[in-house]
Image (cartoon, rainbow, N blue to C red; front, side, top):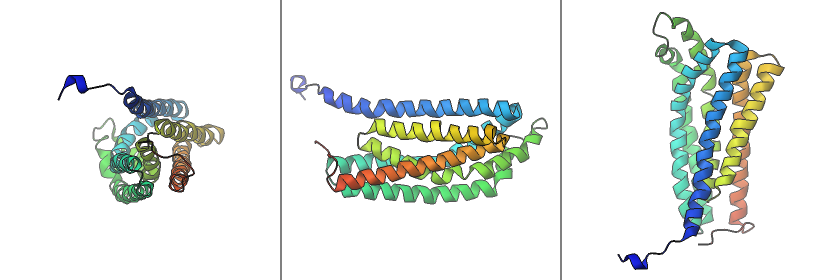
Length: 235
């Protein structure tokens, strides 16, 4: 190694930041979503609804990990395939990621639904919080459905990151989580006066529609990439 032979290629920094900054902002969007949902629940049902949501969502978040893990692996695989100009492999990675994530999510969803009472007891074992047990259990049994379509949205976003399209991934995540979810949660919770349950149904509906749109878009994008209708890797 000779330091004189080392030269900075600032285009590499640009490529890293093009993915890294949007990915960081996606986490900010998720945090903003949680704060907004808490605020909406406070308005319609008060502090008890917030306590139920906070406790139940921790378990739902754990249930999301398998799908997120599989989707994260797709970043590397799709990135390698993109750099090698083997675009058909990107489609293979995308579909395998979605299928494996869905299989894992189905198993997790079933476990959460069946053992909802036992899991809810973790957050309501004291006498003061015992009344929350059935509420948390009901929340888990409903919101475990959220896990089922996450693999499609996560796979789409992560593959776009692998292709260096971090901004596209960010836009899709923002549209799904912060636009559709909040719009449907507001409509069902406030406009249609469904209250707390309406907010949960809105989150499910918005997330589902957003994930379908994201996955359809990445499928179309990769198909156009394979057919040469979109400029591929310049490496």
